Structures are given as structure tokens and as C-alpha cells.
Amino acid sequence: MLFASTRNPLHRVGFSTALTQGLADDGGLYVPTDWPQLTPNADADDLAALALELLRPFVAGDALAVDLAGITREAFNFPAPLLMLGDNARLQVLELFHGPTAAFKDFGAQFLAATLTQARRDAIRPLKILVATSGDTGGAVAAAFHRRDGIEVAVLYPKGLVSPTQEQQLTCWGQNVVSLAVRGRFDDCQRLVKQALGDPGLRRRFELSSANSINLGRLLPQTVYYWAASLAIWRLHGEPASFVIPSGNLGNATACVWARRLGAPIDSIVLAHNANRTVPDYFDQGVLRPRASVATMSSAMDVGNPSNLERLVALFPDPAAMRTALRAVSIDDEATRLRIRIDFERYGRVWCPHSAVAAEAYARLAANERARGRWVVVATAHPAKFRETIEPLIGATLPMPHNLARLFERPSSHSEIEPTLDALNSSL
Ligand SMILES: *Cc1c(COP(=O)(O)O)cnc(C)c1O
Image (cartoon, rainbow, N blue to C red; front, side, top):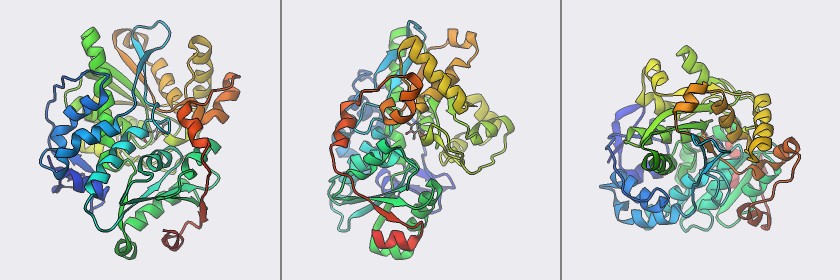
């Protein structure tokens, strides 16, 4: 299989190249050039076996094809359980937060790390991975790449703008991971990474790549849990599943759309955004108006110009076609807070602020639609990652899951830098 740039269908590369480069040279994002219809046989709860079947066609013809079994075993080493909410047989919660840093990004980060480690086996120079983060991505990437031979990671986060729990996850690594607190905002971190990737001087010093969700190696593995959940429902009820997905940069949602395109039994897909309304407005008006992000309580979704929209537009160039295939809604912080309180009282379910946006979007669906479908609300992070926000809302203390508790036992260290390429250059 070859992958084409969204900006030039003739610019095509193989799997290893797409993952190592991150972004295509023309600034586009890599997308599959072919959509085979897949019919996996593996058990829905054996994610590693399912991933091996599903991802094989994408790696076919690449040097890494022979390593795929090892890579999927290593990457899919924690579960994605589907659980009921109350006694509503038509609603389930897909928990994606049982990995090392308790957010769904662990799936993509672990797969990318396992793949790049194999791809760089015989490389002479180390690969330097730059990652800009507003909180969750950096922790997942650092955890997945920590102590990997031949790969170094620099995590850039906005100083003072991440939660204390998140900051510990970004700074507790050492060895091949450096943590840089940038005196600026998330947008500055992202700009610095883009500048660095295009800077001839830095490119002479290092082989550079990015681990943000522009990297195909984060998206492909995320299709696997949508397959797993929809197959489990299909095999049990003979009905397709519909998903409500907390969305920011649209990496998670794009993976769901790709799974459906590849034949997964998926019906509706609802993109649940917070007050950053760029995507819902695009759906309403058919015109894309990127804007600066606004700060909300679901900070990992504070994105004003979602990078993966370019991948969705590649599939649905006509806004009307996209509206038929997908829906998008915007939920504000007040409704999100209320949803967290209600579902805690009613079901004892504690949502993280991002998952609560999706739970509220589900609650706003028409009653007949909820009664007809087999709905899945996607829970993207463990609530304890956001305990400073959640505990006062529910009036209860959240126990730390052991994966997070483990990170708090590690010493933390970081450097502070100005938001300039010079400052980044001298700290790498
Ligand atoms: C990153 C993140 C999201 C948004 O996912 P996208 O792929 O950027 O749309 C939602 N929830 C949590 C907890 C996240 O960390």
C-alpha cells in the first residue's frame, strides 16, 4: 500500500517513509490510496490479533511487514473495554484510558514508537522527535518512546498552562526525553515544531520527525478499537454501532471514519466539540474559518484549526457530502459541568471533561434516534488526570489509577525556554 499527500495525490510513499517523515514535504498529510474491504476474524477483545489482521494490508510491500506481529503485540498491550451506562441496553461507553498515561493517545503513541524503533534499527543517526502538546499528547509520546534506542524526544509545552497532573507526566522521564516549558501558549509550541522541521540548520544536525496526530502512525492503530467495539456489537446484536467522539484535532474521529470506510459495521459518527466551534460552524455554513483557540475545561480539545480536517476533506471534498457522512456539535463548559454532575449522581460514572462533552452530545440526540441506534460514547481519558477540575464538581475524591500513581513516584525535571527557534536549537 502507498500513502498519498492530501496536497498532491501523485506524491506517494510507503508505510515506513510516511511514519518516519510525519508530514509530507509539501506540507500535506498522508492518507491511504486504497480502501480494501476488510473482514477480520479475530476475537473483538483480542486487540493485538485484530490489529495484526487489520493493519496487514497497509504495511504490505514495506520492509516492516515482517515485524508487524511483534509491533502489534507490543503496542496493543492494554484493553479497550465496552461498558454499560445504567440499564440502557442501547448505550455503551468505550473506555480508551487503560494505557500508561491514561488517555487514548497511548494507543497511537505506543504503535508509532514500536514501529519507528524497528524502522530505525540500522540507522546511523538518531531520530529526533519533536512534539508540541497542550497536555496529553506529550505524556503519551514520552512514555511510549522513553529509553528506546536510536530515538530522542523533545516535548514542548506551554509553561503554566497545563494541569499539575499533566506537567508531572510531561517531565518525569529523563534519559532520551527532554521536557521544555515554553514561555508562551500552545500555538507557540506548535509553531516552533513546524519551524524546526523546516529549518535547514536543524535538519543538518538531526533527522527530525513529529509525533503529533498529523503522523499516520498515530491514526492507523486508532482504527483498531473502533473495529473491536463495532464488531463486538455486530456479533452480539446484528446491528451497526454509532459513535460519539470527543474531538479537537480530529485524529480520533478520522480513525473512526477510516474504520467505517474499510468496512467496519459503523452507522452514525458524531463529532463532539467544546466551545471551539470551527468544525460545527464548517458543517453549518460550508465555509472553513480557522480561528485562535479559546480555553475551556476540556483543554486537549482546544483547537481552532484542526489539522486532520484536511484528511476528512480529502475523503469528502464537498461539504454537503461531509454533512451526510458525519455530524458535528459544540457543547459549552456549563453544559459539560452539568453533565458530569448528572451522570455521577445517576450512574456513578465519572467522566473526564473531554468524555463529558461526548456524553452531553449523546444526551442531545433526538429520543427516537437514541432508541433506534446502538450508541457508543467514547471516553478518551481517565477522570483522575483532571482531578483538580472534577473533584469539586462531584464532591468526591478520585482514586489515582495505578498507571498514573506510578508516574508520580518519578522525579521531575525540565528546562524553560523562550518561544524562539534559537532557544529551541540550543536546548536540543
Ligand atoms: C487529544 C484528546 C482529545 C481530542 O482528540 P483529537 O484526536 O485531537 O480530536 C480528546 N480527549 C482527550 C482526553 C485527549 O487527550
